[in-house]
Length: 245
Image (cartoon, rainbow, N blue to C red; front, side, top):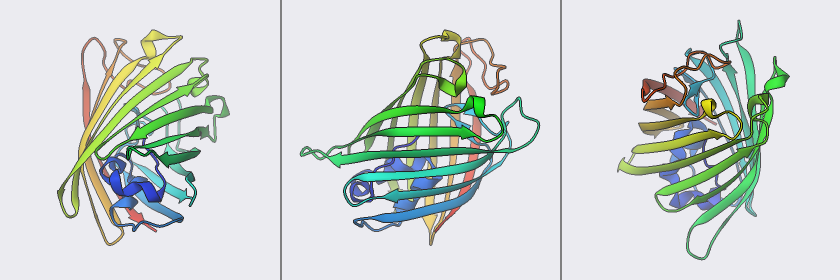
């Protein structure tokens, strides 16, 4: 999803925080020993690991993040999502907590747990544990869940993120991820993102091209018809804007 690193470690990996609008706060935020930050925004489509969790419709998102002085961090977000099997919008909650430290080499590592809650369908609730490593322009993270989306599938998700500064208030970013189910090979998929992000006086905006390729010929589960398989990549452009507070 994204790599949350406490404030004292953000300086070296700011370009990598652009994959999620909540992390765009790092564009203008000064380093501090402890910091509470947040954002509220709109997305043209809420894509998560290559599939839409808003039924290919716009969604609103509110995020709150806390970076502690000793390396502890926590936060969460709520999104007005809608899975394909739902007939109306419902709140989708995500919360995370973890710990991060910088190594003598300059790399920063992190580990923690993430919890996903679907307010109207608690059977889909699930948790993951994660570990991550970040350098100056590159980060990687590995996530494991014993019961992904309540479907009884053990899952592993690997992601790599990178970015570079194009201008004082313009950054490019990229992301690549791969989801693997140990119990249902047809659920496995690959996804990628390439985009631009900018921020000015507390406002942030990003545009990205998102690509998804599923292993199965089609996906018609609770995500809806999200991708085409057999070597076909689904692509779409996603716009997002948010206000930091």
